[in-house]
Length: 116
Image (cartoon, rainbow, N blue to C red; front, top):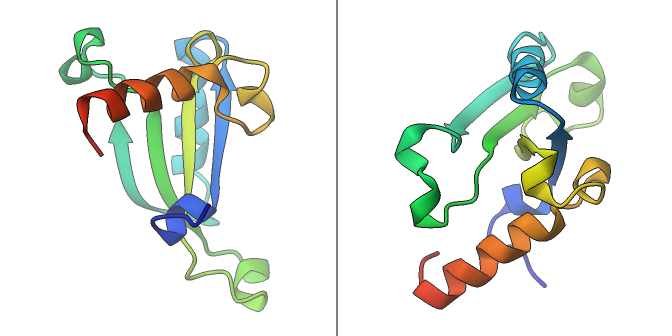
């Protein structure tokens, strides 16, 4: 499968046991001096209610700007990190970088209603 965008080629998920832990994870990324957040989308908010079938997660598009990233020519690359609750992600698969069955259910729903 060819990714639709370069960001999709570099995607990982982090699954958390509690909402407080997830918030701490977001704070850790935002506070890291070696990371620049290019885009953030909070899909846990009320505007993304359960009735819409929306995949619930915090999506961060980021660039690594450390000396090592610059040396390796990676500082311009954007990757996506999904931060989500393990109970919604189909953990433990999500905890090791997959998206679990939660994302698969969302993808099936999205394909049925024709949204991309």
